[in-house]
Image (cartoon, rainbow, N blue to C red; front, side):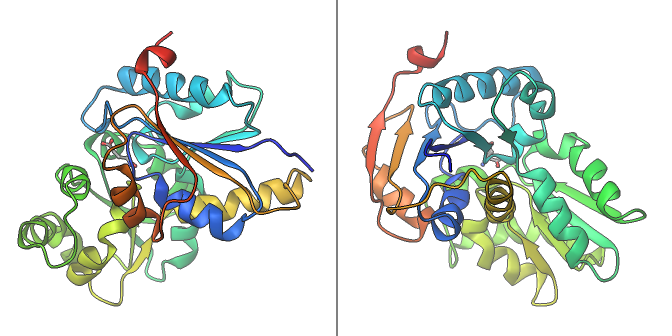
Length: 271
Ligand code: DGL
């Protein structure tokens, strides 16, 4: 048994889609969430900048003596996380491996789509993991840079602008004949219905945050590191104002936010 909390971070609120699943499958775990809302989005930035931000985000979470860190951000997970994870004594897990393995299991025709931020699509980490999990798989990729700002702006199903953007982004993906689509940015499950509306009912959508939560449970179980006993506590930290956090976070979590919400100064992590 390991009583230490699990640390989770994202550039903004998207990582809460992973927290939602963690709360469901690991209800006894204490969770510390950090959303770098003062610097979101990361997806248009360079690999070096994304790595620098990731190190700072991890350093902040480490100040809580966490037993593992989940980079619940597709952009961080595909831009150098593999290189920097070796710098830590605790496991630093991204969202790519679990999502790629789930997609490899799900596809029937061997045609898998990936949508994500520009930085994620530029990277080949997903290609490598998918090909390792299922040799010969065909991969179709498309950057969808407007999705994150639209989601952070609170737009969802029924919003005409979002639906128009989704149709434009996903038209070629639909025509490519994929039967499985990885929503490679943790913000995208919030607009799952809009994506499904374009792709149709026969395309399986993969949620990397949720898959990663399931994989982490397996790892903690195998390592005897689960926390047993009472229901876990949750603390949320953001690097910008907490003012609208509750309303926005409840959409991502699918329930009312329970736990403290605090704003931290970026200076605390910019060391
Ligand atoms: N949730 C992040 C991701 O999974 C958002 C991307 C961004 O900050 O641009 O990629």
